[in-house]
Length: 509
Length: 103
Picture 1 (cartoon, each protein chain N blue to C red):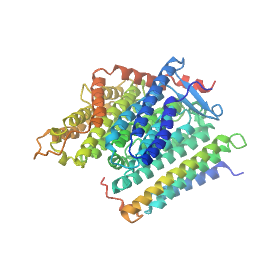
Picture 2 (picture 1 turned 90 degrees about the horizontal axis):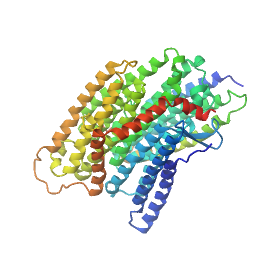
Picture 3 (picture 1 turned 90 degrees about the vertical axis):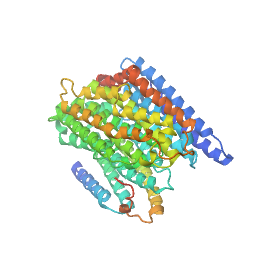
Picture 4 (picture 1 turned 180 degrees about the horizontal axis):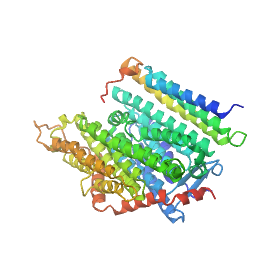
């Protein structure tokens, strides 16, 4: 059964190979910019592929498409895509485009650029594969593809001690997470007899599963939680994100940790929650576990961010807090809550991506990440400062930015009748207000008058400014007119919950 | 043929050994070895479950294990290359010396 080809995935994988060869040839011949141009072309092709997939999926009666590789499911591996997969793919490719354009100037003094662009494309291919996967086997292979390339990218500047130290920490923790997912997957395999999502959803004898189901859930939650930086499994993130090159920080913070969240949501809503009523106190357990971790994550992320002096480290802690907000939507378990969750995934990828890119441009000019030494930088780099200010206000959830729209939906979802988690809304709103206590001082510090005049500092290069300006404009546009993204996220969340029967019946005739 | 509980007990002990090694060992290479031990526990679990259903071996479980061995090899290769670079910077394999990044 083959209804489609995974165009974005093919384009990115082919791009990774072509860019590598082009880059190596270029190094032999001398200077050139073919590899940069090629990576942008392949990412643009992937974006077009995304649109084709969107058109194809919406034209299906069930809203689901299946591509099996080798044998038919359950024995063969398969891709199964619904609108949620398309939404995640779109977010990945969209942010990747900005990050690659930004890398042109940011990485120009580094060597081994062919490997850099190739690995960046491979990391995106891994995330796209995770989003499209229809069984755990495919999922795990692309998951490891994403992880392995991101380890190398974090430790890319190996001549410095910081990236190596952060990279080793990231590798041990994240690989442990991958192994725990694999262990949990083996338990699900032992219960269901195969690893296809749809077959696992209906094939497990939940009446006798009991403890084993909870054990599998704990292992999977720990594994995805390490990747999604849920407190207390977050300790790799504040080291890895600041030490990575800025475009990579933007990718890691903007979309890689959300891929962990996507994995958790997919497995929770396809396998565990539909059958949770069969377990003793099932639905409450799953929801309250997520809710408690959500509170922990946002509170500790915000408190730790307040204590930071390093701008990228502060943004890394703020990412942890934002994952906490997204978990509110997952804990509510309704379509409305998931709408907020996915909308925030997209909005956060824009906002946090922009924040890392803009602070990276400042680091590129002044060579330090210390906030105290950035005082008055706004007078030399007005456009960059403006972009950073917009992204920080968006992260704080100021109305007329897109962060407000998604946070409004997220916190509102916990109040809905039937969910009844008002304490989650209360803590979330307080946290969101509290987070302004570290966003605003950055803006104030940047726009105060500089102590002495310096003529060496100037605005960031134009190739860095273009992606930053587009992202800043998009943040405002989607804040005032959120309708297009809102509709997309809405249909994605509906595909996950209301489309579940279609998702299952497409594979099991 | 042994009962599946024997294999699952072995999986449990292997996982505990690996977790202990990752949490308490100071040598970076031993940490990577601990990682590999947990991965092998998961592989063993797949192999044990693959013989559970049909009476004969389920192909799916076996093929997953073959892929996972390859992936585990990749992860450890990257990890060892990082250990090598860390040794160049710090002149030691003691993971407690890698504490220059603040919390």
